[in-house]
Image 1 (cartoon, rainbow, N blue to C red):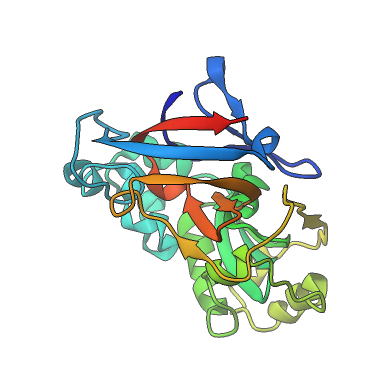
Image 2: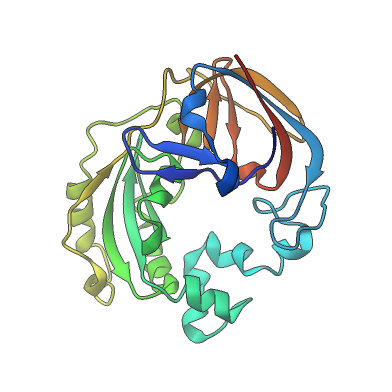
Length: 265
């Protein structure tokens, strides 16, 4: 089956449900656990924005020109504090208004450690699932992306804003993490002008991923270096497929790659 890769869609169930492909022919990847599958890249990458062929993918599925011009690849995607949508400035004002001038959540997520992050409120809990978090809590809600980024920066001296993806894939979890306690310890650390965005809702979101076993080591596969993968699918976590040979494959990173997916009975 030929597929153009994109971020797997998810549902917050127990375990998380993963699907890939267009609506009319979605593949449920949970059903492929315990099965041997093969992924073969045919050398084609089609830019997710302009649909032109490109030899290299930039920023998860863009050709270089779109990477430097598309609003979906704006620098404030990775650094929310740089967002200027609230000032009416951006690569595409309509896009910025629709996506960045909307309520954003600042959150704490837990795996082997606590990390701080930002996401649009409409992306809860999808954002945490895509990161492979085991649990998460919302700390604050701001009216737009820039303020959420400023608040996140204020907490970066305490928490990392990056997930240790290797530990996440090995399912190394610190069960002693108390996100509610961590959240409330943050309040006094925030500048007074940012404390108004702190919320009292202490709902903790928990996530269970479809997994038979997790690897002791991880070997990340890049299709441009290794265009063919084959193995028994043993787990899915974040946006990664995990195989019995300790290979891990980041589906989202390979957005726009055209592949042949084979399932061996």
